[in-house]
Length: 553
Image (cartoon, rainbow, N blue to C red; front, top):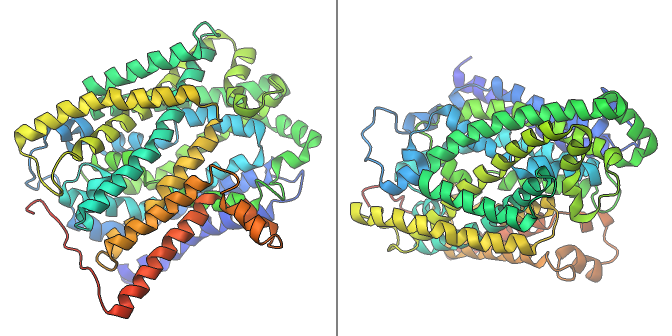
């Protein structure tokens, strides 16, 4: 059997984790049901992660060969990196380990320590969506990341907006994506700053106010970014992951042991007391919410502007294959975060609203004492500072590129000026996020879900850029993204949200439709606009060929 047949014969295995995630909410819907000692839905999500890693480990290397063969290699003659490239992308010189820890930053952020544990404490089963979308996002990354890297490397782009501008030869699209990127990154940066204030305040046993904590953190991360750049952040990310791994695993085992006598005893006690807590409810955070939220999160997972920056730091696409195989195993650490959140229900009962984000820190302080609080506080500080640094660098680079004529290549002097301006933009952006973080009192997970819904609207444009450039007029692509973003924005006002409108206009519709993630409604409208554009272009016999812009243009 030839390699092409083998490759095609094995690709069907990629459907297995998809089917597991899709079926799990319906298979694990009996209150009190356990599987292998864990709540059944949790066990199925763990199975999806393990299956993803196993499937990708047997996927033929040939599945990436066409991209790898076209990509520049270490021996190819490439232009020397500009000052801005060295600062924002580490000179495009990172090996597999550094790229891995940068991409793993999506797992270990303040969301890990605070948001995920808080939702485990306050929501129960709906929290398991985090494992489900991780499994499918890493599965997708096996093919997606090398394709993005190859296109970006060929054009030597610095940012996500430049990627789209050159893919479609459209400065207007690039500027529009820049706007979307900045607006979606701001709530994500606010999430990190809010998490930072909570971590420092709680780790200092209340000695530092949250306002002072976030101010100190903002100044620290600005100095870090301005002076260090991407290389400093990459090495700090490596230290962060080690610390978080040690702290989270220790807490996930020791706190249940101290409170219940073990993880198994914890689940036995909590399921006996509240069997509904570990299954999805029929309304609200229902199976339709679960699956639609997984889908929106998968679609948006690698569409963050700072994720594109992390990809472009790699000197070769070879490491992306190993990253896709390893990341599902890496996310298993989230299981220990859930354990702490569940145990905290008996250690620090009564947390409600945004205070559920305190579950991990308050239970650590109550059960483990000062030494473990110091370890968690140090790890938590890095979980806020490292993603914040990369986000700030990305936003500053996007903004500084807006001052250039469309699709131009700055000369050496202009590039040096760009770096100086980008460094000045860092404190300006940080100031906006600092102010917003002080006004917000929302739990961390809803902030993240909003940001994911926003960034997911770029997905159809990415698919066209990689696999069907020139098939659709750019005006329809922009219109699709705009309609999607307006739909997401409307969800912030309950009376304008799609679910509320459906309930008002068609009250007899099945109830599960009202629980669907607004980001999915937005994506459907987005793609509908593109479909109208495709039909209109076909009926008039017109198309807009896209000339792929390269270094020589």
